Length: 324
Image 1: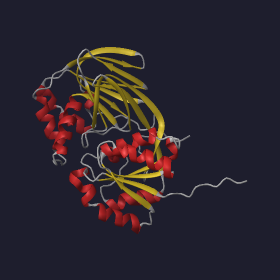
Image 2 (image 1 turned 90 degrees about the vertical axis):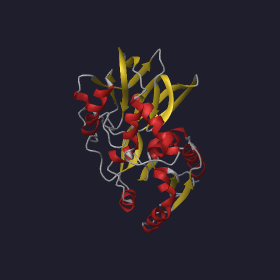
Image 3 (image 1 turned 90 degrees about the horizontal axis):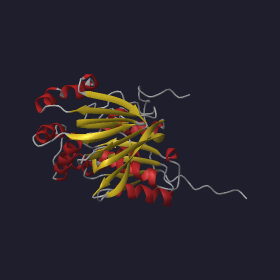
Image 4 (image 1 turned 120 degrees about the horizontal axis):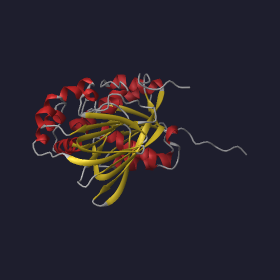
């Protein structure tokens, strides 16, 4: 007897109505019109609270067998969807294809793949049905003395960056946003920030430094176009670690341009490494963010998950490793 295969349920479209100062909601009529124009059979679901996108993915993939998901939102919504893909039990992660229509403020994940801000052009990428498989990371951390874990697909920050992200997210909750919000909060966060002593291990190599900031990158972009991990390769099976050691506040400001032009690694107070496993400990509390979402604090441990997330894209990123 032949086993009956379930019919393709089409596309699951997850919309964050609050992304990009409510562009997710305000522009949904335009976006959904383009989706219909290009013949996509889709089910739209709006998020209602933090982490709801993760719950939506698990429910619709396990119950209805969706294997094509589109995020209408920003980096935070994408992160939640990726966590749903890893936590669902129906399919291997690479059997689910993930696309994005960017309406957020940072859009650093979309920037890696050249996903345009133009909605129609972004939808054309989905209909082209070309995919690329990138690495993901898993991070374990503490939060109110309880262990937690999270998956991410772009970049994690600890120290100063986590403080900036926390302030930025609080302002977003109040309806503020825009391209310069993150940059503005760099300056305001510098006032009270203190350097901390960190014990860092990369694939068994141990080091101890007084640090200003730590980045663990799969992708290279963060903070709305900055490049804290400019040499990161999306599918090489390695994290790119950038450690900014203790810097005076004037020198932080003077060297901001290095984060935009990709020359941060050339600064004498910056160390860079690659590795599959990274651990950060401290007698002080060092806070953590991934893909623009604040999580918890040290001790923190990162593990790479090679080639585990399938992404709709027009062209493979130039920095990727050629398929063999």
